[in-house]
Image (cartoon, rainbow, N blue to C red; front, side, top):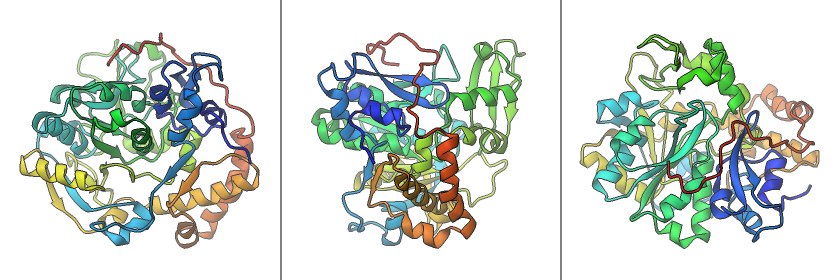
Length: 431
């Protein structure tokens, strides 16, 4: 089984997560583009091998290649019974943003947005690096550094579309004071690895927030969702939202031709369950970290509760001492309304993730047996989940099903990285 030599090898072998950290580490050699049926991908600015070697060096920080904890044992202060399956967890709360506008706009309880706003307003942080809809193409994403509540609120809510928030870590590195980073679990893992090789970045990361993730759909998924909403010309789209305005909220879009106040909608089950999740990038099928194990704080949905008219609640995990301190400070300041919950609430809230993690072991074992490239996942236990939590049918799906996917997804063939709706490369734009 071959190993990748550069991040371009990772992308060609369909293991790229699309985080963008390579474009941050090698900005003169790499830029991120949207590939319609895959996601955000790095393409070379200079001929591969013709730069300063940054593309090869970026491999050391690529979450598509590896994810690894320094230890598999719980540290003092962590909840020991959660360590193996859920990573380091120090405290768990459930609740919501005290600001009702932020709570309503968020995909669940608005906690990520409210905590970031608190850090900017009360902790002296410069900004929050996150993603939001592109102004010119609202069904695509862009990275931006928000410097206040209103900017954060404008981008609240999940974006089930390709995004590369780590591509602009230079904005954090050059900021006047520490900043918040908000991203998917793989994005946060990339930031953690990049901090080890870039001390200037490490000094400016004030807090990392990961949002629970079940996978990133490609832009083709969004276009299919829009077609289901009756949008035949994507260029006529005025806005695209995937969740929010209640929990879990509706997928909704407006075109420039729609009457004022009118939008086209699908339920969460229709948009995610029937359409978007079928378009997830291949690397997501090999992901063992859906809950942000490398973040200071991770937030997700408390799915053990019934949804409906509830304006939204979030499950909140503090994974580091820094995370504990800032969450407790935000509660004391009145920015967050949270109550501690028992450790059992985490698996109850995400009942499918143990099986998903076990299935990854079956898929990776099959891929290795077939001589195909896989990521290196260390101290993220999977085999025991495969044996204990998967039914016989699910075990067969993870192995025999992977054999079928090798052919169906053409995993032996290099990916064709053709940019979709490309824009001029400009690192001076801050978003």
